[in-house]
Amino acid sequence: MVAAGGTLGTAVRALLERQFAPAAGAWPWPTFAINISGAFVLGLLLETLARHGTDTGTRRLIRLGAGTGFLGGYTTYSTFAVETIHLTAPTALAYAALSTLLGALAAASGFWLARRMPAGTDPGRTR
Image 1 (spheres, rainbow, N blue to C red):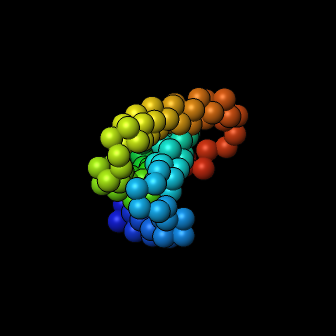
Image 2 (image 1 turned 90 degrees about the vertical axis):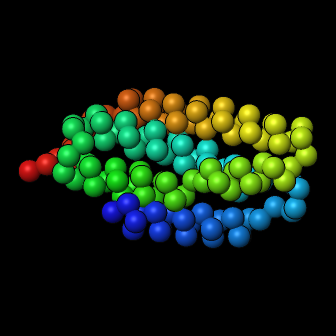
């Protein structure tokens, strides 16, 4: 599940980065947007799964495939690090600080949103 999800997440990220590649030395918007959106979705996913029960059965497979796999491949710390060192000092500092701060806020927002969603039916119920 992790390998399959990671392969798909990495492919989606690569396509987005290629489609929206910034000029050399410019703010790396694709990676910035990918990492922040991935943090939000991961927060939403993990809190939603946790609200529906223990990390077993289908919920565990979803967490591994979608969370660890897809979102782990979709987001990228290594590209973020490489892009940061290729920016001028003030821009690199801003990029690193905003990526970290907004990533944490995005994850917290995902948790917050999941807590406010109606419980509904449990798609990950173990039978």
